[in-house]
Amino acid sequence: MDSDSRFHGAVWRSRCNNGTCVEIASQDGWVGVRDGKAGGTGPVLSFTHEEWSTFVMAVKNGDFDV
Image (cartoon, rainbow, N blue to C red; front, side, top):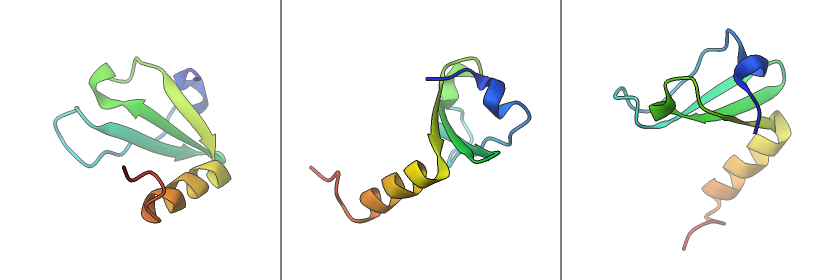
């Protein structure tokens, strides 16, 4: 986990408008993931673009389906 400092000034995106979804930001070669319920004060998981792309591809391929 990382602080928000790497993503200072980043635009955070979410699929919902009520603040209860995961938020994603991309900045300076990094992708940040945070909990929208934390209001921007919680921890941020940081991934390189390569790591994030690998994760997204695995999700699309159903690798995490139960």
